[in-house]
Amino acid sequence: MINFQTNLTVIPNYAFHGLTNLKTLILNNLPYLERIDPLAFHDLRTLDTLQCQKNKKLEYIDPYAFFNNLVETKYGWLLFLRLRTSLLPRPNAIRRVYLGDNGLRFVSEKLLLWREGEQIQLVGNPLECNCDLEWIVEVAREHSGFELSDYLVCHGPEQLRGVPIKDLQPDDFGCKSEWSDLENMARIQFECYPQIMPATAMPPCRY
Image (tube, rainbow, N blue to C red; front, side, top):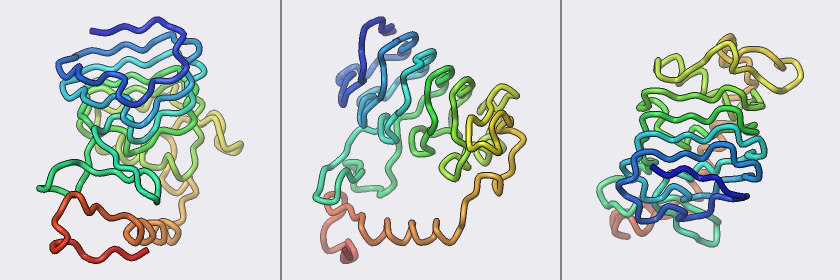
């Protein structure tokens, strides 16, 4: 178990590299912690419990914080796993995740394998209930381990302030499917993974 009590402002890339047998990580009550970078939890393949709570300045956890590899290209950070058997990237699986009472306005669906966790807690964050957060309702309805209590409420937008997220419907988040479709098309156009499969097996990338 590792328990941090320092003046950290950032959990950087590869912060726990080599700690492949770590089971419990505690990052509570860090008054200066502001963000967690991509690959911060790289190598934590056996992590069972993460406590990252009561960090009031923590406003951002990168969507790829729990992944093991990224490749930097001229198009920015593109994700890939060094496995030729699959094109589907996955973060490390964690059974118990406690992210309560931070300053998070947004939590990415990519961050964790939410449906595989036994206990997931996000209460006490000033969450913005916009289209980027619609996934929470969908995942919670499919998986009983995701805690949607009366205390997990929207901080914004104004018309949803104070409303428990469990009382919302997907339509309340203001998503527009046509824009989602365009975004998905753009992602297919611009992202390719030439190091995962032989060039002969890959369709041509269109930029």
